[in-house]
Image (cartoon, rainbow, N blue to C red; front, top):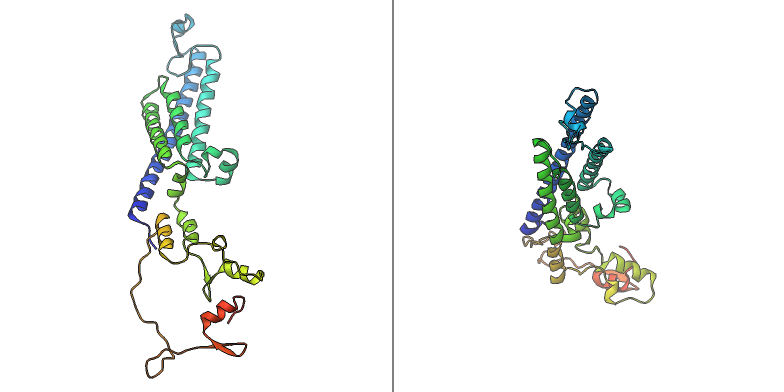
Length: 277
């Protein structure tokens, strides 16, 4: 089984958006650290009197010179807290995009977990971008934050299109989970594993549709497999190799005695689903 071209294209496109999101978050993380260090150095120079404080003391300056710290009560505290929150948020969003630890996000931050899409992630990225771009910053934070805001808008669009299925579609190891339910496991005699267990434990055979998992091997099963991103290819026709072919070319006819009556293997398993050869 192989994935259809549409599924493969969506997988690549969604992972490209995912990679851009991680790169933008890492760049904003780095730029926030740089701005935080520059602000602390500018405040220290201002406190030590290394910069001109005349305009600042008269109230004509909105920011401490060479920094993003506002000229207001506890401005240094709020500026530093803002940068620390942005650093913590970007780090958390990077872990969410990587998908580790998934159980932690599913329990404490469900909107960033596996059961939700990337719309909430895009909203948070846009909020971070708007928070940084609303202040005067240097070129490096300006470019990286604008990139993050653009990726956030893209994530909102992707979240609206695919909703909660987006993380399943872009999961690199998701094929391991999808291949488990494509076709049922069939035991000898034409019974699935669940049907055989039911027949062995219940004296009355169950023929209801709800007791039959999967869709068998017909056209409906093939359609269900294609909906999950698989294509069923027809194998090359070939004759089976039998070591016990008679001289006239007929295949050997193996019988099993059930209560003294010779029967074919398929009929034997239909009558005795709990037995084994």
